[in-house]
Image 1: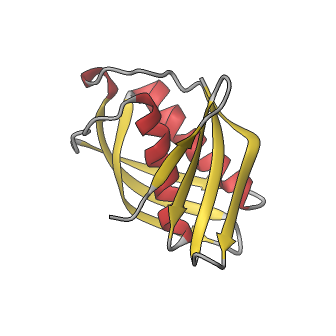
Image 2: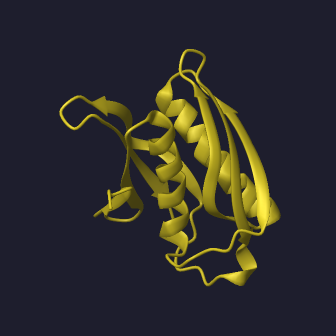
Length: 140
């Protein structure tokens, strides 16, 4: 099975890299990494959430995309299981996604992600591997 994301040692916060054959897959895996940082078990698929975000470049698009998930988590207790559909408009830096998840109160959390940061963030295509690589740091 192909690796979707990995955590990288960081002094105070949580740093990860996410991968995908497409930009959409890399964005999906970034959201999964963020929620996996909070709870690393299986999450049921009971609720549906729709996410829309835009940016001025890929980094700001990623930041806003992940922030939308944090807002849903904080305001509605939505905890991500998987992203069913995702569409990224690469020219206009817009993303729309449909996600499924469950109520956060049903899970034991081992990290409290407060925010996404721009620290060490990048979104790039690696020609050698033929994959998109995303790196981000989460403030905990």
